[in-house]
Image (tube, rainbow, N blue to C red):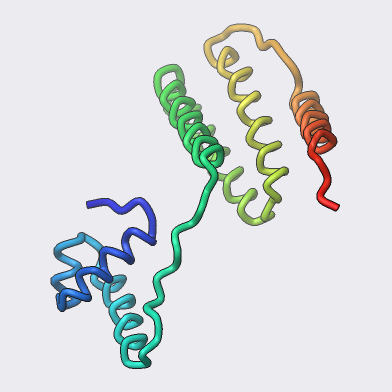
Length: 167
């Protein structure tokens, strides 16, 4: 049974722990690795001995727009990969995936702000849309990377100017 988040996983472990199940039983029932179950059972037991609250984090409160945006990003990536699988030869696909992985790693290491992430995401999306015809032998059309980034920066500036200030 796959869990959508650590919160759901921890809640499932906690529920079975409250029922008196052992680490092995919880692991078998949930499919969660024994080491993970053991870690949380240890935390639950320590909190129970102290008489304190059980350390379960509250669920995050994401706005519906954030959830939808995350879904759309994942959909875009999967759609792009599916398209590439259909139209590319294996070596080309390998290098494209390696480039995408490198981009993800660089993004994680640089710890971009949310605004920078959105800008990068829109630029990559635009590049993917414009680069796809190039693989099939069609002539490339559209804007350069710098043009796309500049347009997105201008859009973000306009959006910030429209927001009311909280003074």
